[in-house]
Image 1 (cartoon, chains in turn purple, cyan):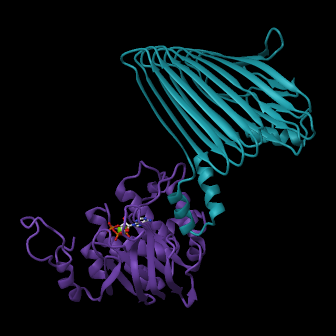
Image 2: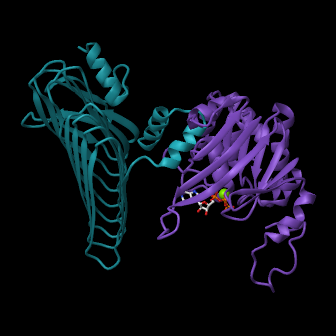
Length: 253
Length: 306
Ligand SMILES: Nc1ncnc2c1ncn2[C@@H]1O[C@H](COP(=O)(O)OP(=O)(O)OP(=O)(O)O)[C@@H](O)[C@H]1O
Ligand SMILES: [Mg+2]
């Protein structure tokens, strides 16, 4: 279980001339993520989803508020310690290395370089073939490939809490459904508390609970049906001939 | 013969656990320690006794020759001139390298001047590793020079590695490339403490369709300093690329100067150079997989220098 209590995240505002010298990215977020449940976080580009995920992982330091994981306060904990407590984050924008392979990352994530164990993880992930293992995680990887690696390294940790930040970006048509199933199977098998940040219908429909973020605040929590009117209201499309009427269930993008 | 320190040095510079298979020449403290030749690869001392001449017969394929140098005598500055004559169409691996063990306060140094004459269609892989060990306060200096002449369609792959221990190193690497030949150089250097390393590369693309790719990876820790100079001059329709990456840690200092000179309208020369700290996103990714900050730094450096 993860509790967020009055989380703020502010950064210095470089553009401010007379206005406030700080920009509030997360503005008083309080929410409890229950163990073993599937949460979908969505909201317009730039609303603060990744910032929230990074604050949970400890990559961003909350300016104010408390984060409690399994009854333990982790607000001041390092990234490493949070990872060791069982929190895992699949990045929206993955790091590219020089001289580090997928096998290397997977071994670090799994805490073993035992070939058999790595094979088990690959088999579980399903969509990373064997020859994938020795690919360098560098700038030559395609957008979808790096996303698959990101997901595999998250799952390899058998985390208590997994946050997947837009796992579907660049993922091909044939992999989206297996990806949703895999994330769900992690929940059934390991009771992983799951947060998927996404704009994709397939993930939002699979979630037990939707969290809608708008301008750094939680605008809605609940089921997808209840969110639909709000999703329409959030449309900022000004090209009326391109974006007619409301955003329907087929298109939350 | 070989004592425990010698064995350790040989293992480090040439990956040798015991005497190598095939021809070899081991030089210890300025003198020949042991040599073996084969029917295809000959090694003999040069006329003035300042080094060796290694001759590979034309067409010799898949053979290797080891020529390590070890030094463990305080106050000794060993200078050696070696010549490699590679016959047409040969394809061999040459493992060189120098290990210094410094136990006392006297300085120790090695200067190896290696000249390669690589015949038509011949291929060589040249590995040179530099290692220095020991608790002594004496300065360990290594100044290797390589001069490489590539005949038509020859291919030379050079791997030059120096991971710590050496106080001062000045490497000079010169090459002239004939038509259709290719030179690939990969240099990896890690310095720490107050170590200084300078690498100077002058490559001349003389023949049509000659190619070179020069890759340098530097890690500069603590108060150490590394400078990298690369000059590629194209005198023919040719291709050259320089890629130099330096990671600076602590108070490390680096100067990287890639220079391209095209003296022919069909020359294609490019370079990429970067100097900076370890990328933050790489560190964060590894920490999010449970490594500590220091473990993450180590892992990134290890990959970078691999
Ligand atoms: N460290 C930072 N410094 C300054 N601004 C930041 C910082 N981190 C995030 N922001 C800003 O905060 C806002 C929210 O960013 P965030 O990445 O959380 O958005 P998001 O909801 O994940 O968007 P997307 O759907 O495009 O991924 C953006 O306007 C971004 O520019
Ligand atoms: Mg985002």
